[in-house]
Image (cartoon, rainbow, N blue to C red; front, side, top):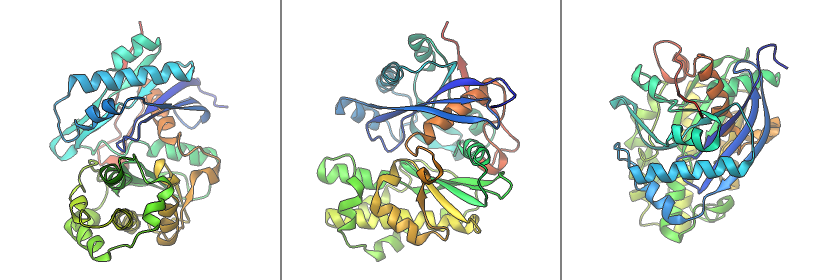
Length: 360
């Protein structure tokens, strides 16, 4: 147990893959070296129409009032449904636009109303201060990854990948410090959007259709060359979920199986390219929804030098990790501690952030 004051914190995450679920995690932490996962609840959002309204905001930096109301309503329901009690909520909100090169990142969600209606203080808008200070605003979870790695006494160097709508990676040195962190490329977004278009289903369960398809290597190579500059760009760097939307057009003439197989191969290529900046990782662990895609995990295990295992191998809950991270960051924000580092977002100096809302 930490010698510092320990808080109970709820973390909320609705990722850019828009899979219809809100992750609710409960942790104990001092916001520093102590972080223990306590519980997890997954709230399934009823009503496809609501998700379509939110999805329609992607690429539009202007906030849509109705979409924000829906996002907030769903998160209120998620917190109440969990039954968790806590000192603070870390509310990430729903990212609908991310363009740090233009000084813009937009996450929908009314933190003040969430605090009032749950009776728990809230920290939200955790990316804005970093972007305003010249950082990428993403990824935000490296400090949590490092805290969990150190607490577990794991030996590095190692890599923690998160596969949501976008894929990102945290490279952790042998001493437990963050070496660097950045967005790799697409995660689930391309595959999920293609799956919805072709079948109406939210995702390719376990990657079964992709596994039955043929990879069109010429398309993978063309897609890579289209954004070769990004892959060679030194970190830090971050992405919007739609930055690789052009690849969807490239596979539009393929069968569903071949299209998914090719999109999956491009996702693996992007994650493998990230290794040029984190060479020497003894092991690679994967959290986020993408680790449920057996075909994707098998391909990653063969592509990454350190192999690829789900974070469950560490005793973590890979569905909860991202939400847990925002609970951890909420406590750090409340204590005025940094949320981002030059090594993680390129900000000039360690940067705190977040907007605090009292439930009173």
